[in-house]
Amino acid sequence: MLVFLSEWLTRNVASAFNVVSYLSFRAVMAILTSMVVSLLVGPRVIKYLHKLKYGQVVRDDGPQSHLVKQGTPTMGGVMILGSIIISTLLWADLTNVYVWVILFAIVSFGTIGFIDDYWKITRHNTDGLKARWKYFWQSVFALLIGIFLYISAPTPAETTLVVPFFKNFMPELGLLFIPFVYCVIVGSSNAVNLTDGLDGLAIVPTALVAAALGLVAWITSNVNYADYLSIPYVKSASEVVIVCTAIVGASVGFLWFNTYPALVFMGDVGSLTLGAVLGVISVLVRQEFLLFIMGGIFVMETMSVILQVGSFKLRKQRIFRMAPIHHHFELGGWPEPRVIVRFWIITFVLVLLGLVTLKIR
Picture (cartoon, rainbow, N blue to C red):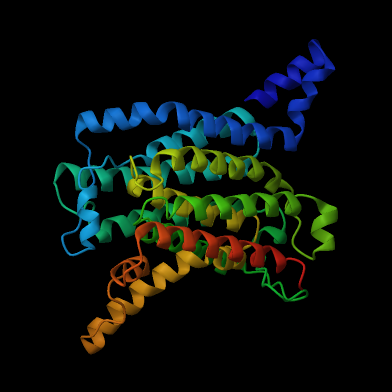
């Protein structure tokens, strides 16, 4: 929105307004805007959620230390999503189709998460939206995104599979691009959702991965850097940088209230959506495997649940004390802050390793 305004002001008032056209300036402003919005609306959202008695429903079979969290306001993800949307609409070039693809993902998956949280609260249980319906609507929206990106792809680069460590092996997926996109988005959405079980555990890895994907988006949209690193050049990926930085700012603002002991939880409206958005961004910049590496914590949490359920069904035995795996460490005697910070550190290392793979090809 401000891009259009700055163009008019540059032509009719003064050339100094042209600064808004610079991607670096808008990226910084997107971080600051989303962070400030999140910090400003946070207390009001928390107060309103308290008033509505929209409190977290805690499982009885979980760690006993979590019982004190019963009633802590949830659905705080609305402040994250609102901050991202406002910042993106202000600072991104709204003629860029990738911006609207991401905004569609935010609204669609945010709606699923909102309904899920609302039903959990109003029905006073931990089930919320039935799993089959949640998965159904996730699948519908992910497939819509995959189909749209496939149909609208201007060049084969937009549907090319980039494999880490291989310089000359980048197959064009063709129609397989659609189911691949579906798996990435739905998988990422549910992975972040499973990780969001401790105060601040999911939001910091989300911010770190978003920041790294923002850097990758900037590199991908630069023809010289993309050629140097032997990755597909995707011109439209430039505006994805703005969304990534908006995610970072909104995450930092939310962390102010979500850090241990949390004053508010993001709920499924936050975690399902942020996971889906990370998946969409990785698809847009053609770095799905990079998301797999950098989001290793999300992958580990998901695999722990799959292994736990599979083992119990096949052998009637559990591998972990409790899944997702962060609960396993809690029940093993680790204080909650220790689990959280160590998972943050692991993510930081994985993000660096993921970025290194861009050069080692």
